[in-house]
Image (cartoon, rainbow, N blue to C red; front, side):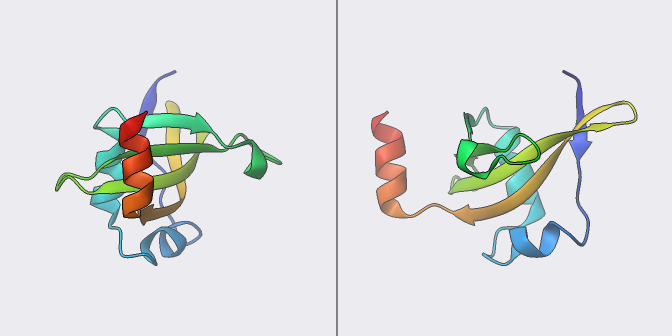
Length: 95
């Protein structure tokens, strides 16, 4: 699968940005070899996934996303993003 970028618009950016996470931070998660997991509880019409990774500043970020076909490949469409809580980070690091 050839990933060619990110799909940002007025439908997904406000929801992603409402927790204070920037587009740059969200995109950095995907450039830092994140843990990616299926999200079957929220996958009704298209496959939803979860990514856990770090921002460029080292903060852990959780991103719900999907992958969509684009003209010349596939794009990551973030759906929601937030900084992870300390307990979540501890649990993630133990795995």
